[in-house]
Image (tube, rainbow, N blue to C red):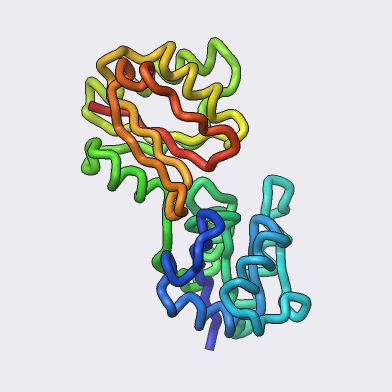
Length: 234
């Protein structure tokens, strides 16, 4: 019987697994021996947190990133054809969303390996749910340009889509550059545009607020090194 490719959500931060993950995840990771991961150290810590009895040194990890070769990834996934289940772990959140795990899923479909997505926290969906912005028409852009003038042009484009199409625009930034992004957003967006800032999702320090740009200018939060996601809309 062939194995399956399980897309296993991980934590968004240092929260207790029982607060954000169903118990079936704990049972599953206790049985899987082969993993595709974004970062081996992060994966080891997560698995040990899920089940203290797990011995990471006895597991097989294959790291996927921009340097991973197609043939190497295909060969690893071929183990599912031999009857072995394989787990995919993102560094945070759900595999395949802003994550190199999408490449593994693509190849799995080509190889006719069954793909099983599992329930867990997604910063994209959690922030959209809590934003009060349009949840029926939205786009996740991922990272936007770092340098000007590309950044300003992109921000204005996203704002135009949000206003003309009533389409919520969702994007992220590397945590240590969050404050720079907020500054650029407040300088570039119209004062009446609504901006949602959501950070530390699922953690005790969780912060989610939606205000107009004009209102944000009165009180700008410090987001330095805090995982955050940004949404603009009407």
